[in-house]
Length: 86
Image (cartoon, rainbow, N blue to C red; front, side, top):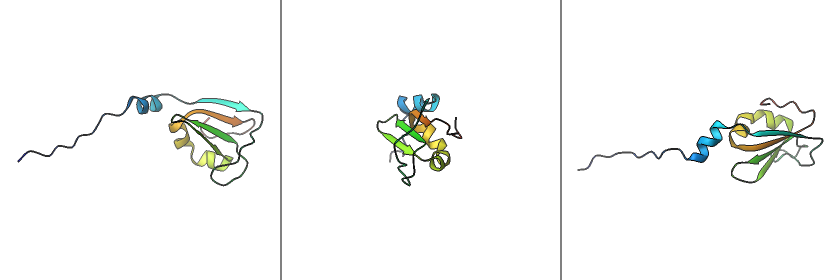
């Protein structure tokens, strides 16, 4: 009867801005948090654009670097940590 059309909504402005902007990267002398994946000492803390924070050890920070950059508003690195996305 009526043709079937698939509606794909346009991407939200928030996702446009997230993909266009790089997160602010700062350093701290030391971090007291533990990795949210494995409980090792955190080397990187991510403030998410959606709110909240996640902490990662060096291994997990480098392993998930692309995802971190995509969702981060701000990244705090421990002084001396060489992050792959820096």
